[in-house]
Length: 210
Image 1 (cartoon, rainbow, N blue to C red):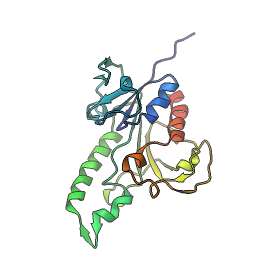
Image 2 (tube, rainbow, N blue to C red; image 1 turned 180 degrees about the vertical axis):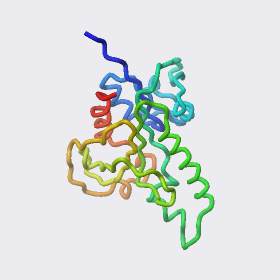
Image 3 (cartoon, rainbow, N blue to C red; image 1 turned 30 degrees about the horizontal axis):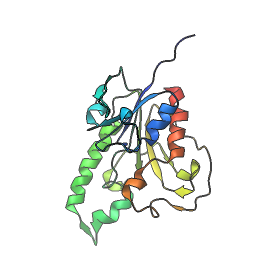
Image 4 (cartoon, rainbow, N blue to C red; image 1 turned 135 degrees about the horizontal axis):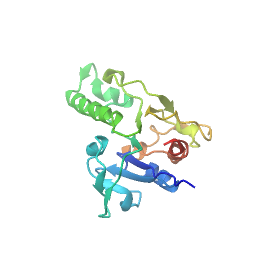
């Protein structure tokens, strides 16, 4: 019997390890990468530092447990770039009473550039996840928009996915949405975490096709 090829996956801008854990549970060699320490409990799977070298193709690194790794390629990169300055939800902070906030605009330009670098990541397959962006930034049209309630969580939170060489994510468990996740969750860090149902669907639906 032919041995199945090992799949190497990077979850960029993830400290919770929510997505990383789901891919690991299915046998993939997945790593999270973020400038923050991981809160997911697996230092041995976490790269603490700048993700840009990996988006450009770097394949050697040291995880937080001190172990050195060198992998042959990235089969999949899933990126969660910061959305504070480009999300549609923040448009009222960018322009208020008809006045443009130049500082937020400058941060937005940097955020858009990083978003594009995520989209251009050197991997066989790429997924970039973000909230609905402001029209002013002219980001590419998302491949699809998903909601937590399509994956077993009773909340609304429109989430865009930009996909390269990946099929759209199929809903798994339909729940009745009771309230908005963003409006009822005040901590930005908590709001940005990937819902377990969505993370599980990514692993179950995308790993077999890599």
